[in-house]
Image (cartoon, rainbow, N blue to C red; front, side, top):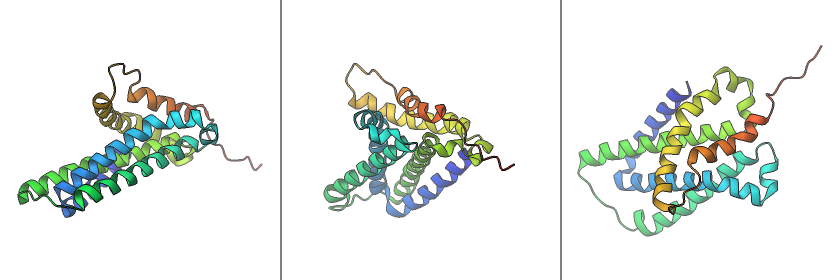
Length: 190
């Protein structure tokens, strides 16, 4: 169910991308990929440097969202100021529609996967609805590999030769506090 909801969200983003065009969509996808990469790899660093950021139940989830949103806003502001806001690149209509739709679909699926990861890292993953739909298993099978593929792609480009950690290792470190928490049980009202 989580996978098909992600496909629907990605289709919506593809529709929006066709409206804005290939050049702007490519820039947006680049910004999304970089911001999610920064969020995944900086969250363990931030929570270890600032213990208050990771001590709460929602600490990792809030740090993930904050870093991703902040990085995206900065990157999007810079790219709008220097690239997409200054000039526009025109492509033939079929390439523009198909290319922007494909990139929009990929961006939408990445955003959905990231939001599913944030929910999985938070205590919401222990809620009844999440256990009913087997959220943990669904996200670990579909969303985590997709995020890991994009982040490993960026990591292969920007990391030095001594690449110690893979994205899956970092994500498993983020998931560890959520897995250690006991499932939320309603109070017994006998």
